[in-house]
Length: 505
Image (cartoon, rainbow, N blue to C red; front, side):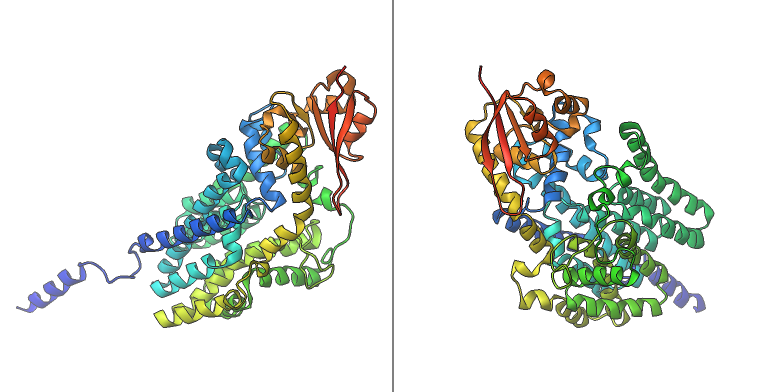
């Protein structure tokens, strides 16, 4: 019958679609275990070698989270002002476990989960965009096999969480789902300040693609993060821009000191590009740049623009926000903020996937991934991982005086006697010595700490004081003779650390 063939054809068309077609679920069950194994293996390796707490910022993030639950004045106010709160909030359930706080594994578990989430959504976004399993695997492997990514997802830094948020937004743009993009942006704005920079671009994308309702929805959800942080700073610190211009801000730390790129667009781009090349490796740069051109030719303008916005933010920050980057092969030939170059890795990995998507073959994916990994294969030593190398070089002095001070206090400190010290790097001493933060007094304790500095004769009763020579704590003690200096720790390239003990009468 004439209609029989058409009916059979119609029934056939309703059968299970061919694997990889748009609308089918990507095989997350396949990629998630690979990412989990990579994450756990990296964390175990860095933990075994004692590298989890090399970064000073990693110590600070871990201890900020800890002081919310373990402090003389625990609670919300301990969340701070300069660093955004989401990483510290996510660490709370694990950082309250003493052993996990002291080892740094409390943060490793959280950031490892973020790494897996980011990789899964990156895989899914590329799969949906180009209907190519080979391109999807290329994207996730270029991202996940980078040793700098593996290091930073193992420690208490914010890169892995920010990647998780931005990959959520990328997936939502490919899908598209405005509410998911809004939630991803909200997470990004509560993790790193470049997340604030992403909002206009994503709102514009949904305005052109989905209409004004979707754009307003994305903008409304995402804007809750910055609005909350403005309010937090205004209420608790008296200045809604305290995070930007307050005592602990990047601008205040840098001050008026000059650095390469300040007020110079060419040098800003040069130094960010140098950091991006060091964290990515020449192989990924080569395939990634070529692939980005291919993605633009294939009219993926919006996605390339979105992934390029975080790198653009750092060039702007170098130019005018007091945020320098130092790389070893450019003046001043040192390491500082090289991890900011990590912002370019998702863009380059997306470019590598675009190359494979043109002619999706497994062997081509293998060639692209192998080319990107060549620098790490030929020089597998950790000295070549610039983010690790920066943490190792810049922490030598701090690790030396932290270890010596912690050893002394471990042998002499009695529980409950109390210690006064600035927070910052000093908190690492108490973490390493096993002294609960609730037995310490620091800036986070507000008026009481200020009262000790102003009138130690009335308010200082703790047994111990740890200070840096000529800092405000040390100066307060110079006017108060009831404490004797019992230990001086003199380390090269650092002002002497002084430990005082109350004089028995």
